Image 1 (tube, rainbow, N blue to C red):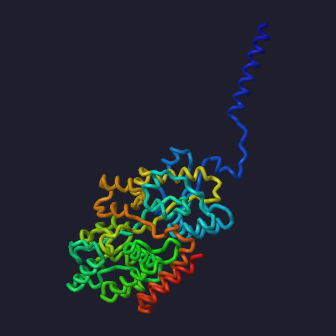
Image 2: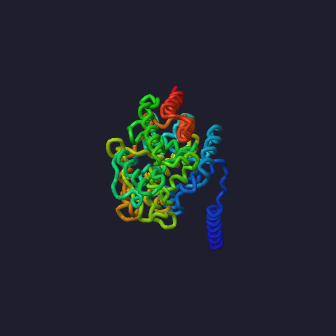
Image 3: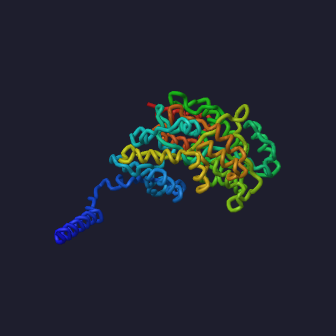
Length: 418
């Protein structure tokens, strides 16, 4: 009996050991092409200045269980990579940078997935219409860049002009007094910054750039050329701007080279930074002037995030979009990258807690962002812009009169409309 009992005990122990051995040595999983999906990963392709910090990515993983693998490339390289991959029906990344000027082209080609953003988010981001086509939102604006007016009060005095007539009068006096040779900084080189500056001038003075059928508004465009004509002929704008890189024109406001600029909102953070600015304490922001009073509008040239139509991880990618749309995340993103948030709620909070010092008109101007494209950014925007900046450049060089420039640009824009 004892032998039998001992035998049962040994058998029971052996059975338990075998069972434990099975738990400790599970069969290895087979690797597959879906390993990335199985691990809950997505890829994100953005420029260096648009890359979330490691802390932000860790927070995203903690909240969702999804790992976001971020790759940074140059702006032009991203567009090229997305185009090549999408042409082959593959995703360059699950989530990628979408500039405001690309969205029409990308949507027409079928490269972007529609986004389902909350009404709270859509109502709090004024530049959403730039990324909306036929009522559908295709990208989330996450880096704000809208046009704001800068005035050097040491050159131009403290009076704030509400109209272009008042502005011209103030700046002509500054020129006469020898405070500045060419008071107005305006890009006129044959490049994109000239197109965006001309559109801003036309739209903020007239409230329209394109008609509802996407044809050019001839009266508004003529007004734009007439305004530039007056400023060039009266020595308010340096004629050499026609051959100067636009980025150098913009930097002129912090280098003390001009008294007035309508330029990127990002310069607000740099005006009083002695490492960047030569005019600390001299420049303030003002609301954009208009024809009959302060302009009710400004334009935005925003960067956004889109989800590839060819992504195999769309649900996970949408989680990342949702994460980046939150006001608390945008606040943190500003602190990391010093970019202006697209969420008005986030911008307000950063100003209220003093993170953004000396904001001037940054918040008030953000609330006036409007879209000059009644049907969304056209798919042919790149071609239209190229034609526009070449014509404006020819005009600045004295090769075209107001009438000739107006007719040439209107005809060119209308030729793209199908």
